[in-house]
Amino acid sequence: MRRLREIGDASSLILQFGPHKGATLAEVAMHDPDYVRGLVNRAQRPEVREAAGRLVSALEAAAEHKPRAPRGSNRKSSAKRSGPRG
Image (cartoon, rainbow, N blue to C red; front, top):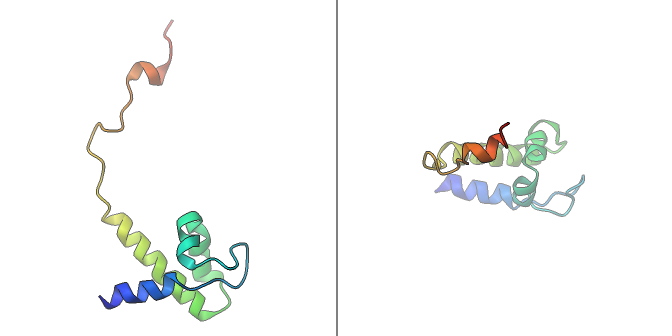
C-alpha cells in the first residue's frame, strides 16, 4: 500500500521545465514514456530523478504482469498478409 502511495506522489509531480512543462509526470509517462525514462538520468533536481525512477519502475512492473492476449486473437488471414499471388 505504501508503494502505491509513493507512486501516486511521483506521478502527480508537475514538471517545471522542458517540452512537457506544466504536465504531471503521469501525463508525460502516458504519452512520452521515453522522456520519463530519460529524466531518471538527466533531470537536474534529485526529486525529479527519484520520482521518474519510481514511475518507470512501476510502469515496467505493470508491463511484466499485463495479461497477454489469447493466441490467435490478433492473427490475420494469410491471403490478406501476403497479397495477391501470381
